[in-house]
Length: 248
Ligand code: NAP
Image (cartoon, rainbow, N blue to C red):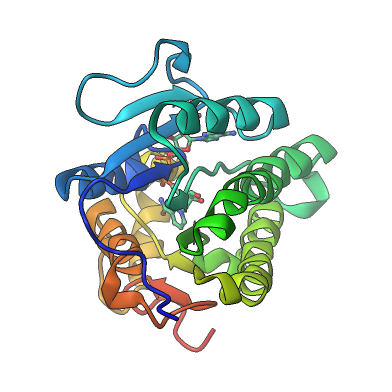
C-alpha cells in the first residue's frame, strides 16, 4: 500500500486563512504548481457564486462557526470534489497576561485556532478515508512548543494542535492520510503588527538566524509536506523558526 498522494496537477487544496500572510504564500505556492486552490477568511466573499474561471477561489468562512465550515466544504465539494490537501492555517491572537485575560479572549482563540481546526479536519477526512489518501497540514507555532508570556490562550491552542495532529496521524495512517504540523517562529506578517520596534528587536535577538521569516519560507515547508517527497512523514512537528525553539 502506497501512502502517497499522487502529485499530479490539479489536486484540490484548501488553505484556511489564505487572504494574507502565511496562508496567502501557501495559496500562491500551490496555485503555481497547478493545484485548484480554495482559501478562506472571515472577510472573504460569500462563496455562493462558485469558483472563478481560473485562479484561486476565495470563500468567506469563519471557522469559529460550525455552520460556516459545513457550508464552505459542501460548496467546494460540489464544485471541485473532495479536498485532497488541507492546510489549516487560519489563526488569531488575543494576547494578554493571564491575570488580565478574559474568558472571551481565551475562548475566541481556542474556538478559532483549535476547535475550528477540529471541525475542518473532521469534515475533510471522511472523503479522504474513502479515497484512501490525503494530506493534512496544521500550522501551529513555537509558542505552542516553548510557551510565550502573554499568550496562554494562543500557546494552549497551538500546543493542542500537536496532540490533535498526532492522534489523527495514528487514527488515519491505515487509510494513507498523513497529518503533520508546521511550527513557525516569527514570520513577517500582519500578526506582528501589534509589536513596537523595541519588541521586534528583542524578538529577532532571540532567533539564532538573526531575522524573522518570510511567509514564503513557511509555505515552502507546507508544500513539501503535501508533496510526494514527504510520503513517509506523519505525526511530525516541523519547526520553521530560524532555530528559535531548538530543543523543544
Ligand atoms: P495573519 O496575517 O493575521 O493572517 C491570518 C489569516 O487567518 C487571515 O487570512 C485571516 O483572515 C484568517 N482568519 C483569522 N481568523 C479566522 C477565522 N475565525 N476563520 C477563518 N479565517 C480566519 O496571520 P499569519 O501571521 O499569516 O498567521 C497564519 C498562521 O500562522 C496562524 O495560525 C498563526 O497563528 C501562525 N503563526 C504565525 C506566526 C507569525 O509570526 N506571523 C508565527 C507562528 C505561527 P480574516 O481576518 O479576514 O478572517
